[in-house]
Length: 523
Image (tube, rainbow, N blue to C red; front, side, top):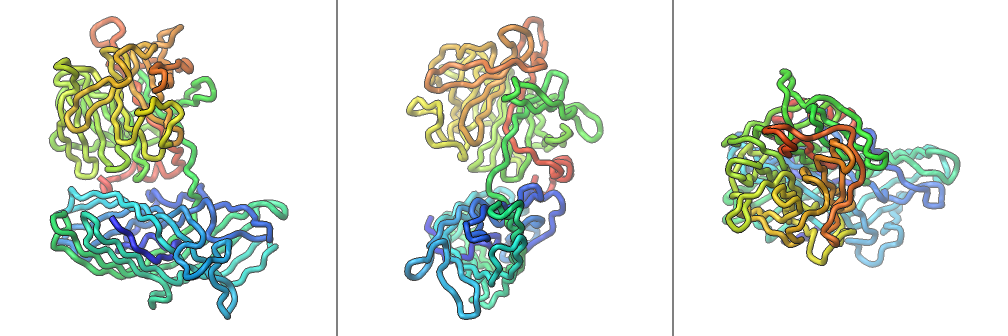
């Protein structure tokens, strides 16, 4: 894929027709302001380092040139500014490339644009994640008064023109915006100092951007024979690009969603019962978080996919075609490069199943087996693309991006599950990892450390939390959880239990507005 672009970075959501999304937006939460340090002159350097521009309350759609009743919904993230990109000559640091006669300055910089595309209607099976790097940017900011506690000034997008060619789905994708292209793009920035002189500023900045987009579908792709041209307007706003701290979520043996504070000796805060609006209790056994749509998914023992509200525990059923058959479903994982989910059952056929939560379809990949022996994979997770390329515990091969790891009840160890067929292998060895009955597992999205919940603490019948070291191929028990996860199905310490495990940020008021509400627009 080749991306040739000359783009104004503050205006990345440039694709499409816009519809209001309301409080359920996954973008621009009011509790993630853009905060930038004083650059030593009583003001800040723009573009704002550590921030990104996004549309706070709108969805974006590609509709022109598509069949009637068909849309491509787009989530976008524009960040990682690099000074000096896309200028003719040498940029004047920091990012200033021109001082126009009318005052103020032009900023030129590079950036990265991340797009997640999901089709509907005739394109229900279409999904792509695009990463457009080396996007060049030019904006203009009007004069301000450095040193003032509050500095308000106008800004505008000067030029945006990016061309994507040679993509498997797009023969050509051209995005154009900016006043240099006769497309109005005015805005305003207010800098508000947060303390005494020298302290940080909150950057409240927006652009009302008119844009044009043209695309031509590639031969052999879902977009073959399609082409369209759209002009529309969108507002983009500055928000913090620093991801909020992740919290560890699990489900107790009383069907309660809980947040575990690992730093506080595994103290837990109970958030609510995992049940539908109608009151039906959902026995959630697996959890997985989709960071693109900010949705926590759950897999019930009975094989029902649900969304789980991270504030209240309230669930909403996502009916699958075909529905999952059998009992003792559990492990659930999210592939952050494709948007697909994976789950497995610990009895019956021991199937690994691929789920498309957008199309609401399930596909049996194969049995979780090794050498003809069916294995009980109770927990699973993929190494996240956001984690370090070389994680703290690395055995020269694992963990690795795109690899599905599973907790194997049969041998009480960590295995690799082939997503193309379900076959289970043991590159870390077949020995026990040293804790009792590991169940759900999850990677921390920032550190790459693998966490596991197991059904018996060394000194009690409560559940416990561990971390797994890929170098030593052993787990270390961290602390006792204030609840159990064992479900008695036939006497003894059966381990078809609770204990889904997933990291996700605190979503505040947006949980109630989005995750527990009608998410059908995204399903």
